[in-house]
Image (cartoon, rainbow, N blue to C red; front, side, top):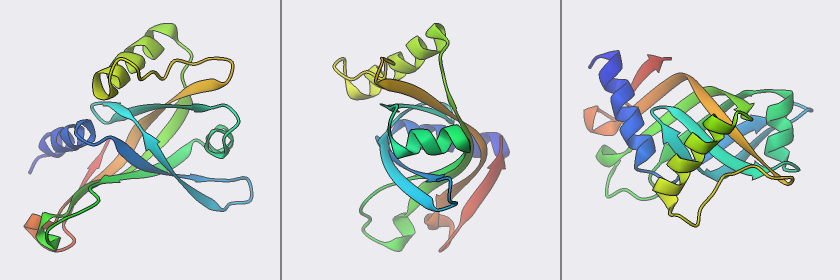
Length: 148
Protein backbone atom coordinates (compact mmCIF):
# COMPACT_ATOMS: atom_id res chain seq x y z
CA UNK A 1 0.00 0.00 0.00
CA UNK A 2 1.36 3.44 -0.92
CA UNK A 3 1.98 6.28 1.55
CA UNK A 4 -0.87 8.26 -0.03
CA UNK A 5 -3.29 5.34 0.32
CA UNK A 6 -2.39 4.96 3.99
CA UNK A 7 -2.87 8.70 4.53
CA UNK A 8 -6.30 8.47 2.86
CA UNK A 9 -7.27 5.60 5.18
CA UNK A 10 -6.13 7.62 8.19
CA UNK A 11 -8.15 10.65 7.06
CA UNK A 12 -11.26 8.51 6.56
CA UNK A 13 -10.78 6.85 9.94
CA UNK A 14 -10.42 10.18 11.73
CA UNK A 15 -13.51 11.48 9.97
CA UNK A 16 -15.61 8.55 11.14
CA UNK A 17 -14.70 8.58 14.85
CA UNK A 18 -15.76 11.22 17.40
CA UNK A 19 -13.12 10.94 20.13
CA UNK A 20 -9.38 10.72 20.47
CA UNK A 21 -7.17 9.92 23.44
CA UNK A 22 -4.56 12.68 23.66
CA UNK A 23 -1.26 12.21 25.50
CA UNK A 24 0.56 15.26 26.84
CA UNK A 25 3.44 15.67 29.29
CA UNK A 26 3.35 17.97 32.31
CA UNK A 27 6.19 20.17 33.59
CA UNK A 28 7.49 17.36 35.81
CA UNK A 29 7.67 14.99 32.83
CA UNK A 30 4.66 12.91 33.82
CA UNK A 31 2.37 11.78 31.00
CA UNK A 32 -1.35 12.54 31.08
CA UNK A 33 -4.12 11.19 28.87
CA UNK A 34 -7.18 13.20 27.87
CA UNK A 35 -10.31 12.08 26.00
CA UNK A 36 -11.34 14.76 23.50
CA UNK A 37 -14.08 15.27 20.92
CA UNK A 38 -12.39 16.43 17.72
CA UNK A 39 -12.87 17.29 14.08
CA UNK A 40 -10.32 16.58 11.37
CA UNK A 41 -9.19 18.03 8.07
CA UNK A 42 -7.32 15.09 6.54
CA UNK A 43 -4.90 14.21 9.39
CA UNK A 44 -4.91 17.61 11.11
CA UNK A 45 -7.22 17.59 14.11
CA UNK A 46 -8.94 20.47 15.89
CA UNK A 47 -10.54 20.71 19.31
CA UNK A 48 -11.48 23.31 21.86
CA UNK A 49 -10.71 23.34 25.55
CA UNK A 50 -10.80 25.65 28.52
CA UNK A 51 -7.70 27.80 28.92
CA UNK A 52 -7.20 26.57 32.50
CA UNK A 53 -7.01 22.83 31.76
CA UNK A 54 -3.97 20.68 32.38
CA UNK A 55 -3.83 19.73 28.70
CA UNK A 56 -3.71 23.39 27.64
CA UNK A 57 -0.87 24.09 30.10
CA UNK A 58 0.99 20.98 29.02
CA UNK A 59 0.73 21.77 25.29
CA UNK A 60 1.77 25.39 25.88
CA UNK A 61 4.96 24.16 27.57
CA UNK A 62 5.58 21.21 25.23
CA UNK A 63 3.72 21.06 21.90
CA UNK A 64 4.76 17.47 21.19
CA UNK A 65 1.73 15.23 21.63
CA UNK A 66 0.50 11.80 20.66
CA UNK A 67 -3.01 10.44 20.30
CA UNK A 68 -4.92 7.32 19.44
CA UNK A 69 -8.26 6.84 17.76
CA UNK A 70 -9.94 3.45 17.78
CA UNK A 71 -13.19 1.65 18.44
CA UNK A 72 -14.32 0.53 21.86
CA UNK A 73 -15.53 -2.94 20.89
CA UNK A 74 -14.55 -5.56 18.37
CA UNK A 75 -15.97 -9.02 17.66
CA UNK A 76 -12.42 -10.38 17.37
CA UNK A 77 -8.78 -9.41 17.09
CA UNK A 78 -8.84 -9.54 13.28
CA UNK A 79 -11.25 -6.56 13.30
CA UNK A 80 -8.95 -4.20 15.23
CA UNK A 81 -8.19 -0.98 13.40
CA UNK A 82 -6.96 2.36 14.64
CA UNK A 83 -4.67 5.33 14.34
CA UNK A 84 -1.63 6.11 16.47
CA UNK A 85 -0.45 9.65 15.76
CA UNK A 86 2.49 11.79 16.81
CA UNK A 87 1.98 15.49 16.26
CA UNK A 88 2.61 19.10 17.18
CA UNK A 89 -0.08 21.13 18.96
CA UNK A 90 -0.60 24.86 18.57
CA UNK A 91 -3.26 27.32 19.65
CA UNK A 92 -4.89 28.84 16.60
CA UNK A 93 -5.88 32.48 16.58
CA UNK A 94 -6.38 33.28 12.89
CA UNK A 95 -10.13 34.01 12.50
CA UNK A 96 -10.34 32.25 9.12
CA UNK A 97 -8.68 29.10 10.43
CA UNK A 98 -10.90 29.12 13.52
CA UNK A 99 -14.00 29.50 11.32
CA UNK A 100 -12.88 26.60 9.13
CA UNK A 101 -12.20 24.41 12.19
CA UNK A 102 -15.56 25.38 13.70
CA UNK A 103 -17.30 24.47 10.44
CA UNK A 104 -15.68 21.01 10.52
CA UNK A 105 -16.68 20.59 14.16
CA UNK A 106 -20.31 21.59 13.55
CA UNK A 107 -20.53 19.30 10.51
CA UNK A 108 -19.38 16.39 12.65
CA UNK A 109 -21.32 17.10 15.85
CA UNK A 110 -24.27 19.28 14.82
CA UNK A 111 -25.10 22.95 14.76
CA UNK A 112 -25.18 23.23 18.56
CA UNK A 113 -21.52 22.20 18.78
CA UNK A 114 -18.86 24.87 18.62
CA UNK A 115 -15.14 25.20 19.25
CA UNK A 116 -15.13 28.98 18.99
CA UNK A 117 -12.62 30.61 21.35
CA UNK A 118 -13.78 32.93 24.12
CA UNK A 119 -12.39 34.45 27.30
CA UNK A 120 -12.48 30.95 28.80
CA UNK A 121 -11.77 28.73 25.76
CA UNK A 122 -9.04 28.23 23.15
CA UNK A 123 -8.84 26.16 19.98
CA UNK A 124 -5.96 23.78 19.32
CA UNK A 125 -4.71 22.32 16.09
CA UNK A 126 -2.60 19.16 16.09
CA UNK A 127 -0.61 18.78 12.90
CA UNK A 128 0.55 15.25 12.10
CA UNK A 129 4.21 14.28 12.20
CA UNK A 130 4.14 10.47 12.08
CA UNK A 131 1.30 7.97 12.11
CA UNK A 132 0.67 4.28 12.33
CA UNK A 133 -2.50 2.85 10.81
CA UNK A 134 -3.45 -0.37 12.58
CA UNK A 135 -5.21 -3.06 10.58
CA UNK A 136 -5.17 -6.47 12.25
CA UNK A 137 -7.04 -8.02 9.32
CA UNK A 138 -3.57 -8.02 7.68
CA UNK A 139 -2.11 -9.91 10.66
CA UNK A 140 -2.04 -9.58 14.42
CA UNK A 141 -0.27 -6.33 15.31
CA UNK A 142 -0.05 -5.08 11.71
CA UNK A 143 0.75 -1.33 11.44
CA UNK A 144 1.49 0.80 8.37
CA UNK A 145 3.80 3.76 9.06
CA UNK A 146 3.56 7.15 7.34
CA UNK A 147 5.48 10.36 7.88
CA UNK A 148 3.86 13.73 7.24
